[in-house]
Length: 404
Image (cartoon, rainbow, N blue to C red):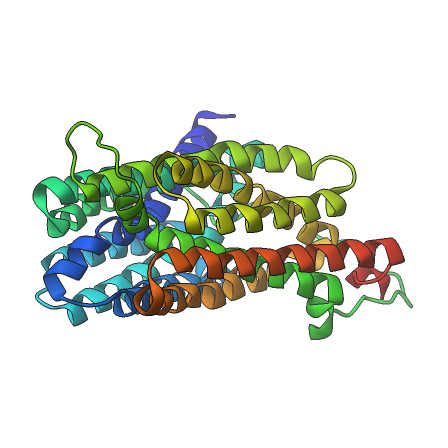
């Protein structure tokens, strides 16, 4: 890679960790919010839902905004907007203002994924390697945010946590301003088509073949599992794990142990990528989707060290799903459809998957935190069923848009 390409990779890799980390500050301070504002898990789940739903809004139109504004201005909007939203959350005088600030945080961050992927593929020649680095750093942010956020919150309070976390976003915005980046690379003009050559027409139904519909559904269910577990994992860790670490309080311990569990996603995502390149992808995908169900079911009833070990194992295997699902989307779409297909794939997953925060909050408030994991295990089971149906379609040679 050239020096310019390395700077782009470093910027996007750091940004990926920061944008995902911003979303996990809320779970790490959830218990303190509950105490200060005297609200239940359902209300807090709805606030998490607002943030996560807003985070999915920009996935589909993000590419169009990228082409209109250009990468630099969109980058500054994304991270300066995130930084200001974090400051507003930390200074909020009421829970309503706090919820609005988190909504803006999600909206500002929502353009990041189409922005970063377009920027990398347009500015880096070895973009496959760059995308691998970019993907792995998300898990660093996912692991560090509850770890650091829980520690700061236990010592200085939840408001200081949001104020301190605004700093990395503002630094990223300033870094982007000083970085050379272009919207796209020039391509050779297309050869004129011969007379009588038929241009394939892409219809809306091509984006919703049986196979693609299965893959969209699996991603929605996977996000149900992700948002349902991560929103309440630090709080659940704080209540279910009784051993002491360096005389830290329950908020810090919950955030620390949750961060360690989410760090397992780094290895899971890498190994999932390797598995996606192997043979029998659909069959292996069935096993990976089903494995989360018994682990989540066991987490419903486990405590202390056993619960922590189950969480480590669950997040290790859960992050296999994303690279395998992404690869299957590519297998079932021609290049001309892929951008829009991925836009649908991410937007429905973040948008509909975010509803899990509200529903999980309702279950936690009505029945208790542990039953959140029982409900999420059902989503994991349905993921496995959809993956099995996809494998059956492959055996019968149906389901792909390429079949039409």
